[in-house]
Length: 296
Image (cartoon, rainbow, N blue to C red):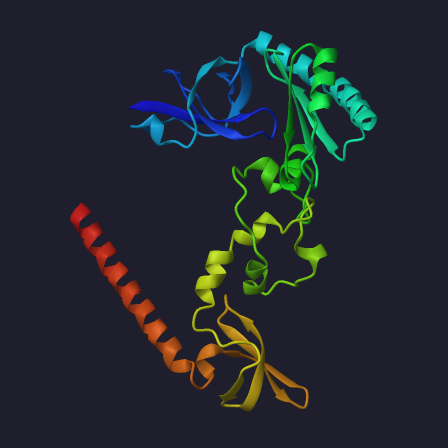
């Protein structure tokens, strides 16, 4: 058995698994960990967990060296203070080489054995001459890493339309696929300015409630369907999956919100679902009553 923990490397960087080496770590602890070359710093984002086979994890799992001490924190702060100088020099060299790339951020590794420059570009960029030039200036290993617009938003940070910090910066570990179908299922306006984030892509939060809306939309009549109700015939112009209601246009300006069970052809289906829910509820109550009696 191995005890592992998830660590977010650098600020808003990638999240990897590391072996704790017997240390008791909690969320928020600053740690020094093994890297591809040398040491790196990061923040613990999960509690300790045990795993039988380390090889089952997607990437080679390295070790946590130690918790960050005062000297380590001073070193981290020194590295951050050098960021502006790194960006200034690199941007100047990009202009000299006339490369079609946008520099996003730069940082030293913890032990200053490497400098990583993050950039975005619509196409692949041949930056070999730029790397040689930067290596001759800084005298360390240079790595240029092309990132996507979502990673750019995570690094730079900001606030979404809700007023809160960006999800990708605050708690999201991975970028899950987001499609326009998710917005349609939730009856959201398909205006790009309303459903797009700072990165220009569809907002990640569209996927948070998608499964619930998808489940509630089952057996719901479609918009545009002609229906018969107790109030006459009409056409469905809107649906509310959460409330199980539909908006029906009866013509001549008469619009009403009705329950799905009030529509001919849908009531039977709804009634069957209701009976199932009642049966599940009664079964749960009986099981709960038996459990309480056993405890007594």
